[in-house]
Amino acid sequence: MGYKMKRKSVDPVYSMCVQPSFIIGTNNEDGSENFAPITWVSVTHEEGDGYLLVISMFGTKRTKQNVIRTGVFSANLVSVEMLPLMDYFGSKHAKDGKKNDVEYSVSRGIALDVPTLDDSPWVYECEVERSVEMGDSTTFFCRIRNIQMDERLSPKDIFDLDLTLLDPVIYSGRYHSLGKMLGEIGDFRKNV
Ligand SMILES: Cc1cc2nc3c(=O)[nH]c(=O)nc-3n(C[C@H](O)[C@H](O)[C@H](O)COP(=O)(O)O)c2cc1C
Image 1 (tube, rainbow, N blue to C red):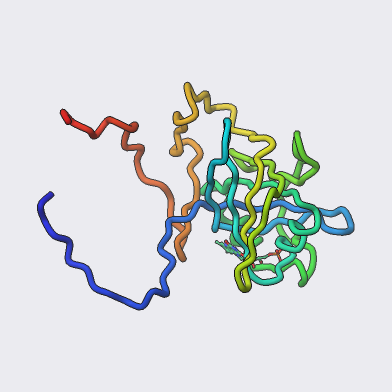
Image 2: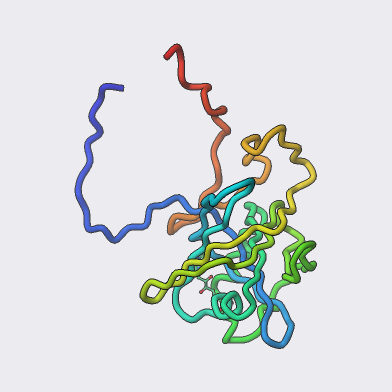
């Protein structure tokens, strides 16, 4: 500490924001399922317990159309093991045909009638509460109606989540994995 980081100014065109990777499961008009990766995902809070999932989609992709039409979707956290699946779902657009060139197994949500990915260690079942359009993008604020978490997790409180166990893919233009768990809030406060 005490050292001044040497930085340089660049055009504000980068989205370095460290993004969590989710594969979004939606219902097509014909009742079949569709999956696509979306990493513009965060949370916010309104009141009471729990969070709202905030998720943003650009363009006219099928996933966005399905979310607008049905108001529901699943957000399946992508573990490192699932990277090939995410890469596949992300490189094929639903308008170019069903995404059935690779194998994966699908179940239905517990609280909502949405397709979920059996491989995922953490699944949110979401219902859109509000959406905000900005240009080409729509940002959805969504109620989390159910969370399915890996049975190996047994958090003692809502902050006690061992992300190293979930092994999520982190995206920032490139795919990364997570580093070490460093501690809890307060562990670094020293004697202040
Ligand atoms: C790693 C990754 C992250 C992505 N994140 C987003 C995102 O946050 N928002 C978005 O609108 N599209 C995102 N995409 C693009 C869609 O996943 C892609 O266009 C996909 O083919 C759309 O599929 P669909 O036609 O089935 O909806 C991402 C793609 C990849 C590979």
